[in-house]
Amino acid sequence: MGTVPGFDPVTEHEKTRAALRAVVPRLVRLLRDVPDPDASSGVPVWTVGDVGAHLAAVYLAYCSIVSAEEPVESVESLEPVEWDSVLPPGDASFTERIAAMNAKSVELFGGDEHVRPGDFIAERGETFLRVTEGLAPDTPVSAPWYGKGATITLATVTGLMLSESLVHGLDIARGTGLPWPIGPDEARLVLGQSMPTMMALALDTAKAQGVSIAFDVRIKGGLRLAVVVEDGTMTVTRDAPPRAYDCTITAAPATFLLVSFRRTPIWKAIARGHIRAGGRRPWLAMRLGELAASP
Image: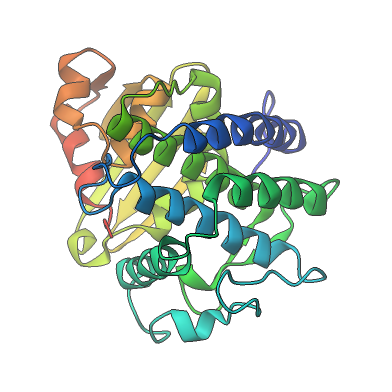
């Protein structure tokens, strides 16, 4: 993670930790207020209860990779989770590995009537923040579900926990009619902390073969990402040095977050004026989302 004037990785990481600390009790209340766990959610193939189960597994997974000194147990067996037994072989694609992880998450928590996702999330959220307190944002963390031997930074992990909480909280809210606002500051922290890593990991390399596009992504409030796709690879750089871009995308933070996670169609965001495209080839804005794999 590069440093430039106005961007302090340590300060931003602490802000992300504070945002996660604030969102956990909101998420717990939301889960406890769900009137019907069998109701449809904002994820077409999952019920509201399935989304809660998935969130509990997310907190289980991320706690397990940062707290080696504290064994993180599975719900049913009360034994440490062996990720190699959950995930497909090492040569599996990003999409296949995330799909396997998602399926396992619902299996771990969905069928156990004694497990309350809200209570589990409250406990694991506190554990994550306690175990990682004082660690540098660039501390490397193993994340096997993103690829064999994959390592990401603690800042990315913290941003991912915040993004999972915000986006899946919205999925639950959409299925229950309960309120779930996502503030611009929360969304901007997610985009700054996790997107530079995750956009590149989620690239559909087959679709990106032979593609050469440079996007200047400007998130209202100060965040700026240079997204460069070059023949099957993608690099995402915060506050990159000046260069020529093919397409400039200017977006409200929460809107870009929801478009990135396919919770809001980009055409609707553009129609509402929440995303604007410019530059030499503004029509390429639609390509950015198409180049990302979707489990």
